[in-house]
Picture (cartoon, rainbow, N blue to C red):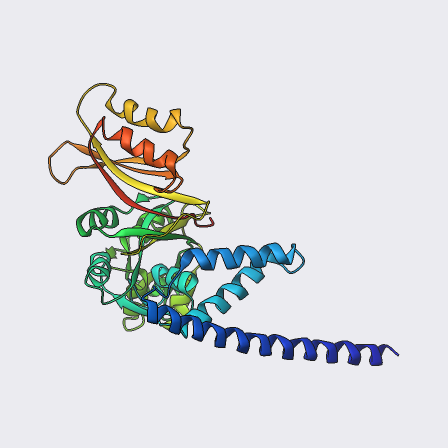
Length: 358
């Protein structure tokens, strides 16, 4: 009796799977047609606002029956696969493969995008600026080490916009060819990764020299050809370059994460759950910063970040990097920026984009 019931339920699952596949085939055919229409009228194939709307509707329809995190991943991949038949998006990231930037690019754009590795953060801006790629993925802030200065300087210099963000949890692992800590004569990694593991390294390997390279994945790649080298990198890098883990999760502070910006020339329309990023400078006088912050406080605009940075133009002068809730097309943000002009020497809008999930 139970065997008959089990067989019946499995046949029902098979029938449902067949229906799902047929609907997916229908969806991708409709996506192809939409892509052709977009091409004819000159529309951008990548519409982040529309994709967010679709995902929100799906989660609402689900009513928390199917596990939400899993449904989000499944449907994100469906959306990205359908987008790929319209136009394959090219995205630059800090390479080589298996860097945290690479992982962020995969999670944001999916496997259907053409991901292009480059050697430096500035190279990403160069690729986007020259339109050899549509978007770039760059680290902007780490929860431990703070703002990534190179990214902030480059977005100012190249005049590109932040049009999205994604948070990635960061766990660092020490790896080499043998898995034995005594074989490590030198440790290499990205400067941020080394800084985030400083206490562990000082305690466990105080006499081993530490050198910096341009990415954690490059460190793993180097360790794969030199048995005396230990690399600090991700588990993905260990798997890709066939390395053995010497020690897991060696970061000094747990819960470490990095915020990545999606940079491009696209201005993203409001979604209702947005963030705006600004750079501004003020005159060297008492109360100057207070006057600027009052513009936000009086409008009850929440600031999610503010940080000072040395100015590149003049020694001992500072600019401020600020994130706030809202979109530049929101009237309240627009009026706030207009009033800021009265108190600032310079105000630069870096972009408005949907808030990423931490």
